Image (cartoon, rainbow, N blue to C red; front, side, top):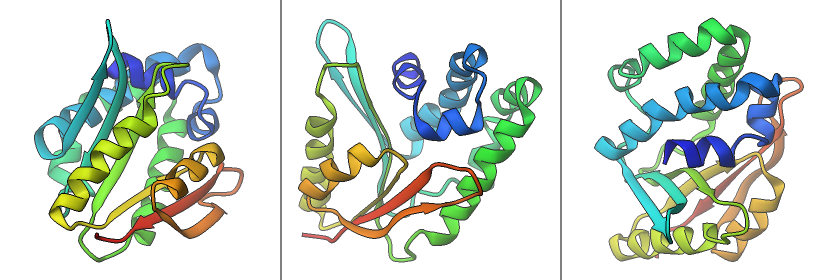
Length: 185
């Protein structure tokens, strides 16, 4: 799962911005996704699509489980320190972006779609997102997500999300972010 997420987000605008050195980005992303996946396994959900191998991963949290508490975030401290040794500025950029997004997050309890990644060509993202939305709808929960990938905005609109805020910068020079909401059904 961690390797698939690192590969999926290797050329993602957010991580291109935070970690511009391509040579070190893959190793940094592996370190970054390790505590994120571990937290989602304990406090959220990890949905996986498998063919002969893992071809897709969706990390998400039910209402009240995201954002991470300080205690939960500290569990990833060894990995974050290793990232800081390689690229302290990049880690600081991610922290500032996350802090800006945390201020914008709706206060109403909701599911939080965190990371959706798939093997190139597998076309699994929409399938995993629909699976999540089936559970969200069965429980009557609203859902929220953020994306810096303009291509995924169209996918989420097709899945019933509405744009809250479209294509705005969280930091000078950072990729534009869109926030999206899907009301309970």
